[in-house]
Image (cartoon, rainbow, N blue to C red; front, side, top):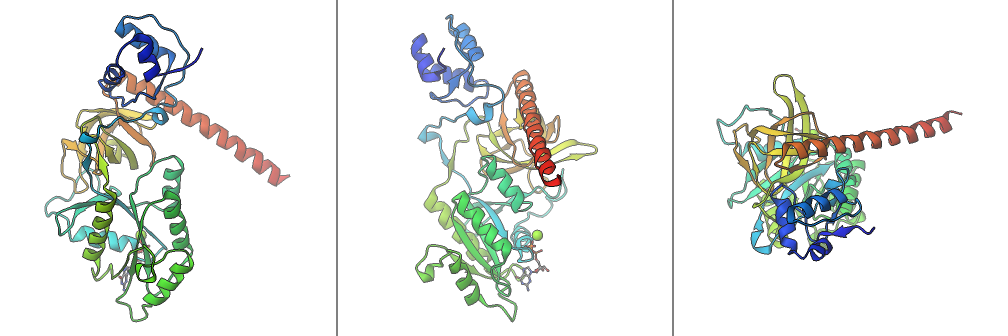
Length: 372
Ligand code: GDP
Ligand code: MG
């Protein structure tokens, strides 16, 4: 038998598709009319609507994150802060730039919460608009997230030290940004150094296809010093200018979903995860699935350790309450039904194990080949 989409199924039982979408929405699932239903779901829906129906499995617990689609009405979408990642060669000043921007922004008396390093934070620019910065643990983690379909970043800041120029990890960063298909802003750092040579940086980047606006390209170049806090306002205004052009939006009026940025086990608090909200609003007490883990949000804090009751799109938050430690790059989703959440998390865990097993197998085969 042929699998049915919500649209097709609705036609079969002569109900509006919105009735079915609403039914799932009430359970924390954002489906659209093109989502394929599995046999269980069709059975469940048939029961709910008083019909008898039997079809084949398609949407399963194993593939739920891939299958879930969101239906947003244009009027539900509101502007959200841009999410920005800083990339560049080691020692070119990523950490200093992040720290400088954060220092000039931390509200006093907010420090000291669940964790200090959350892996992301928001700043409020001079013009009063927010920007979310993500501190990627490294290019590898970024690639890993991308390969799993997790688009975390809207804009990449490519930082290049003016006294060093384009280096191997600069090239990697360019590759990542190009593959992610996101706009790049170049921050030419360490302009305070006597041997700073911004012309060289510009020329070398041009050879890598990064064309400055003054050369007729479309990549903004900002010159400054992360250490001396020079060029930071300029950088933020450029980010906000791009954000305005691109018009980043999200729907806050639904159950939250997003991505795990970092997670670890705390001796007294258990699994602690920092997550980036990408859609919807996250509330304390929500039941969430995060990759192969699940739980009820017991405690939620911002990057400065301030307790929160809710979090909105583009906001990074630290959550407590998951049963295990998820992985960076795992997707999370509110599913306000503990039993369903648990069974989906378990299915995700099985899928994860199966993937690990097949990775190990191919690794073993390869190593046999190379060792004979
Ligand atoms: P990362 O590896 O890219 O995170 O680089 P860091 O932020 O750790 O910076 C590496 C070194 O460069 C540190 O000693 C910083 O103090 C220094 N540094 C960063 N930005 C500047 C700058 O604008 N001017 C100068 N003179 N030094 C800087
Ligand atoms: Mg660093």
